[in-house]
Length: 452
Image 1: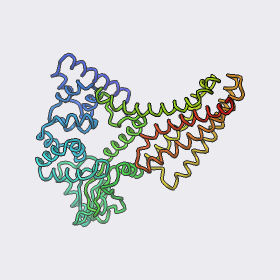
Image 2: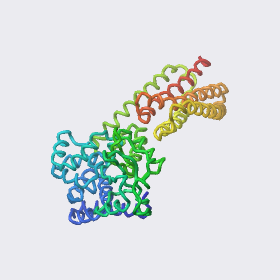
Image 3: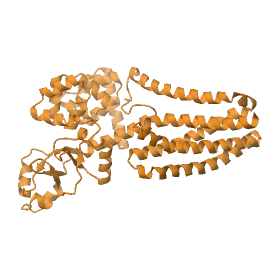
């Protein structure tokens, strides 16, 4: 996380570049942009409104664009890539890591992707095509092919001489991968072990064979959980036959974790996790309009329930004043449970064997909170309207709605996940509808029974 000083420096830089663009001092702006690190330039572009972004991107030197592109959001990255010539994309392929190049090609039309692949060297085409054959959200889609492999029979001295022949080793290389003659993965050789071992020892004597290789078709969220539990910096990726295909590094996992967090946060509001802060009006409006339309439907359902009890509301004005309390308390209680369950599903804590325990726990919490707050609200209602019947009615409705909310908040995401529906996206709307309908129905229904 940036420090306060870094945050102020970023704000100052953003303002300075904005002033340069406004005054038309493009030469100075170009010099500033190309003097920054790739991630700083990307942040500066993303922090600017759309008209300024195009100008800033045009000011970035072509040989530096490969340093900037991987740090841009998918939507912005795609808009810049679509405007590039095939020759420039081919040039990028030699600069970017495999996973970054794959991310770019996956955003292009199939025809353009094929043209770019054909223009690459055989070696570059093979490494990119290998990763492209896997879905984006799998280990194969995340992996890089920049691995250094050795054989078990080699001595440490031979390995050291082999490493010295490289001008540089791939970033975040913490281990070499040991393979057999068929390139099947059999273990890892940590760099730390190489440095402290006798040069006459063989790789077989000091390598680690209990390392779990990642299957290329493993979902990326499962890969992230493995990295979290095992504190990996990198991990090997293998195909069905056990052949080493590449490796995944911790920087890729950080991206996965961030994207999952963005997805959970944005989905609760019905937004795409790739929603751009400065996205144009024409793109932003339809996305939000759809979600607002869905919520309007649920609001009409709740309003229809209220309309059923119009006569009772006309007779007792207090009902109209108090009924939002019941629905609101149910909504908050349900959202608390829903958030806990969705988070548990996202980080892999909730499995079939512990779902029942979790639902029972949430039910008990709901019952206790229902009894507690039913008493509090009942007392407040009696003191406010000097009507003990109103107190009994709202207390009973609170108990019914809070227990329903707890059950719905726990069961809904589990049911949605079992049907391959994203609970973060669909759970909130369904829960709101349930708590509103049950809250109004129980409160107004009980009132109708008494007041007629």
